[in-house]
Length: 227
Image 1 (cartoon, one colour):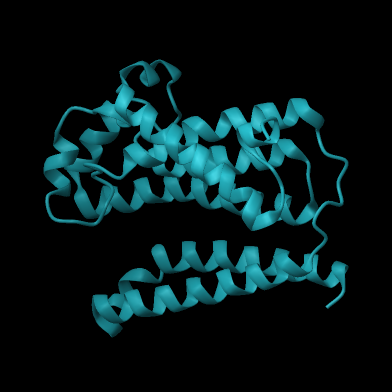
Image 2 (image 1 turned 90 degrees about the horizontal axis):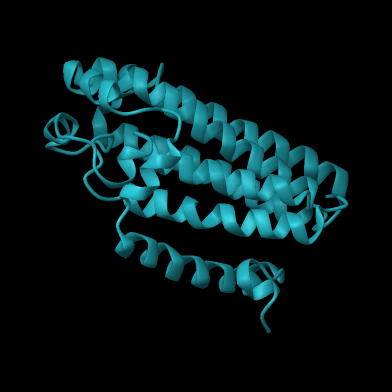
């Protein structure tokens, strides 16, 4: 596979991942669940996602590693700083999230917004979006740009589509949650995030940016400036 064909393949794989996710999560979900049952649908969804991700990985590794000019040290500083609140949002979204398809979601949606949900009702999605923006800021390579754009669309468009789906599935519970929360992040909400979550995110950030060196050979975060 040539470098140019690898980039085309990566773009096709990224479009396939985003497209199949939206299709299976929304218009195709109900008919497939009726035909296959919930377990069968989950298996199909997982296999399709795994196939697309594997395709993306193979194309990504075959594509050029650094073929854009880059945004310099300023870009690295901005990207590094963006990934810290991204981890705060992601970590905070894992607890008491009414968007998760689990028993008690309606009760969680009826409660007052807490923690990262005072920032946005889609903290996980915005965590992914900030990660994507951080990589776009770097202007590092076309392969990174393609993947980051796919993640950005998947996160932000997916969040909007999730609202529509939850309005149908959860009715007044989700509508009430929407009325008390926002789609767009409110920076003032970060003041309500506990110090414990910031520490968890910082430790995770240090670990993930250190792993970035081992995984891709590219120093990221503080490790770019600390030997």
